[in-house]
Figure 1: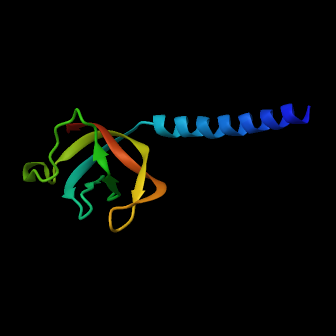
Figure 2: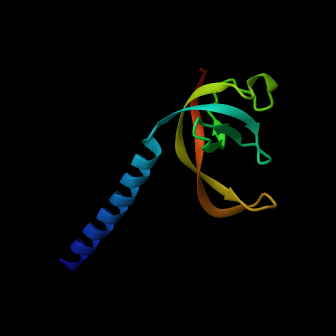
Figure 3: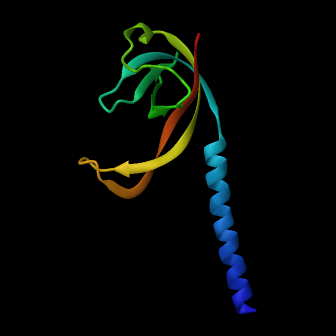
Length: 111
C-alpha cells in the first residue's frame, strides 16, 4: 500500500509540472509595436505605444523578416508571439545545462 501511495504522489507531481509547461508554451500574445532594429545580442527589438520594450529571441522559420533591413526600422507591425524554453549558453558558447525563457515571433504583419 505504501508503494502504491508513493507512486501515486510521484505521478501526480510529474503530471502537475508537465501540465504547467504545456500551458506555459501554448499562450499566444498579440502586440502592435514599432521595430527598432537588432540588439547587440541579435534580438529583434520592438517598442509599443507605451514605450515598453520587447526583445524577441527568434522568429518562425516560415516568416521572411530580415533584422538588418533598414526599410523596416521605425515602422509599426502587428506581432503574434509566445514564450518558449531554450538552452542557456555561457559567454564562450558552452551550454550551461540550464534553460531560459525567451520570446519567439509566430507571425508579423505591417500595420
